[in-house]
Length: 499
Image (cartoon, rainbow, N blue to C red; front, side, top):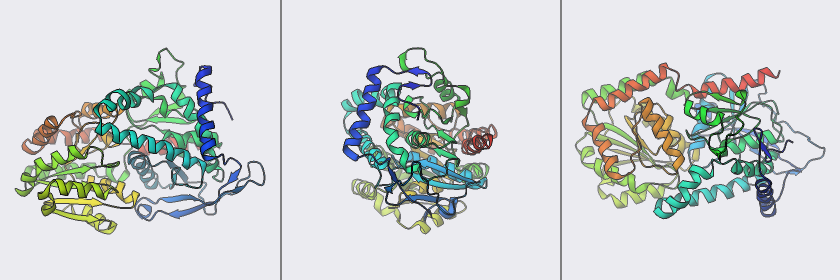
């Protein structure tokens, strides 16, 4: 195994950086153990939520047993080694799951078999324990940042914007990822892996997987997302330029660039079901606007209800318009039912206007399907205990909504008119910048008055909204939303070159 914490794309790390990386790994070994000597049996199970929709099978791991022989493998029965593709991910918020669903959707549409591998779901492994510990810290920081302006300004924003940008951060991550490699022991080594978070990519490389694609999220180049040995894909040309030269990843130093064959621009990672219906859905949006039907706003509240106060202000503003049938509202609170309860307690009129679609996947799918052709009025709330349903609910509702209201995270790249509220973390702002530049979303609205100004422009003006729809059509013609297909093509191109 190459020492990926000492040299990153030809750039040597300082001795102190390497020592910190070693210390980080030792800390996790002391806390969670080291299971590199264990073999975890693999089983395949169709995902109950998106298995039928996207053809997804889950990779599950059993209890570990000592490896009888060095590098011994126990390949699972029924694994499609010809057309199978692993979507490696973790649950950290909803974003990485959503990108994974886009890759799985594209793979399924292209005739491949997507295997879902969530490294944060194997509770018996050191891998999951390490990831969960870091995820808990990130979630805590995110929640505090929404309550404390000082913490957000002096800790959270700098960490997300510059801290994760440094090569020294990647050095520590690479060392920690060595502890994650055992989960891949019984996976066929030449099956393509598309990782939608860097840890599954780093772990796959350490485990000896030979065809790894690292699908980089966001639009702000950070060393956090580097997995040397994988093909890195990016959604924008801005990100391509920044990653190619490792821009700003070691202060003002001019670094050795990433090799040309380590980086690929693909376009946005979007589900086949959304890309293939762009023309139909945009035409329906413009027709509803022309007829004066209620404008449909989709509010998606991820994480632990981050930015609930902003959403409450938006809903409160829309309530009179909803009563007058000038607006309609979808509210997806994901798997956080308490957020819906709190919103209804805060906005007493909301409950009276609301229909609850709670924990009934068939009802949600049926509603989303009917909304494509039938009129929608009032408020419709969605909550699902199952994480796959919680995330994919937004994707289903996106086709029939007129405006998606979201922070500028992974949803900044989706082909639907978007109103961007205040970001969570400095890196997210560049998603809104990109979206505004290609014309399918607003600039980031960093306070309530500007957010409500945008709501008024969507509801009261025609050209502002219709221009976004037209821009989405032009972007599709330019291939901007074809990233998920291109990632899958790249994964199998890597495999075929080595056959």
